[in-house]
Length: 206
Image 1: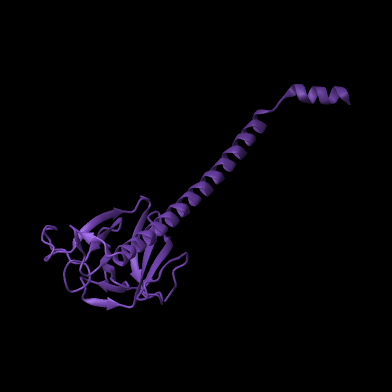
Image 2: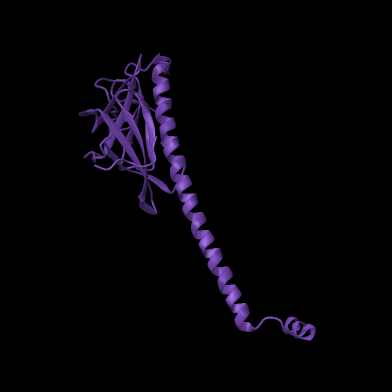
């Protein structure tokens, strides 16, 4: 018996056995990489969603504290403006003109606050794999618009939601974020007229 095992050990692996081991290791590595890539994308989507919710709360807090523009309080509050033509960023603005809602003329000249709202910051989504996909209401129905602004008006602050340059007022909105590589992977940030800002891991369906 001892001679048998000694002979088997000394014989080593055959070429077929070595190839089988290499194939198994390759399959295991491939599966592990696929799982890692999926997890990485899901984490990126989650981070982008919480970044957006945090920026909305930041605008809300600026309105609550009556933050100023060029030494003067923003007369109509602070908000975030979204435009699907630039799905990778959004604008934090001070509303310096009436009516309410974001407005900026085509020149982009913010030195005339009575003509344009003041762009405080253009915020890029930090996760390059994530875009803003669309807008929905809280029932899950799509809003037929490519532009939405969520605005917070002092002193409460009162929350106003508009689309298409303050023409249509909404009771609520969900901003839907998606993975660029898989647009079925989505998360939502909702805002309602009570000022509640929430992250929804699953967006409601109509």
